[in-house]
Length: 167
Image 1 (cartoon, rainbow, N blue to C red):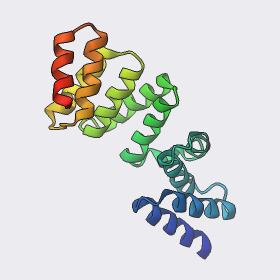
Image 2: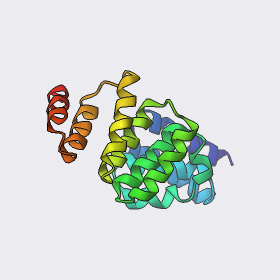
Image 3: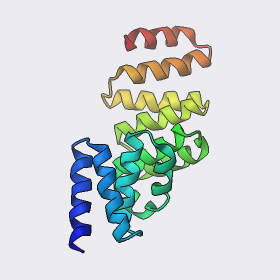
Image 4: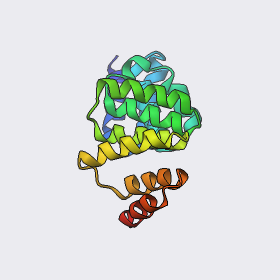
């Protein structure tokens, strides 16, 4: 049990310091001891996510659903992972649940808007980007993605304004 706790602690520390490969290594050592340890699966999933190893990420996310929803950061990453891997319907479903629980979380609003944009739901994405902007989320990615929405809706004047603001 001591080794499990040591490696779990190390995995969390390496995750928090951005050393994702080392975090994965320690997470996997925990899973050798206890294959059902949800925190280790969550840390493995998150760090594989940052390493863009999505096939491995998916395996671990599926094994830590209960743990995942305890943290808005992790839950948001899972929904974003679904979007990045083309699972748009699942991503949007997750984001709806996250927004229900965390309606004023600005990064989640932005990421949900991004997911909707990727799925072609431009009008709804614009509303989320607007809400994030109203909550002082000023970022070139927001303007660029909202500009894409406006462009695809043939609202070119708004698209140009957002693209200029993104610069």
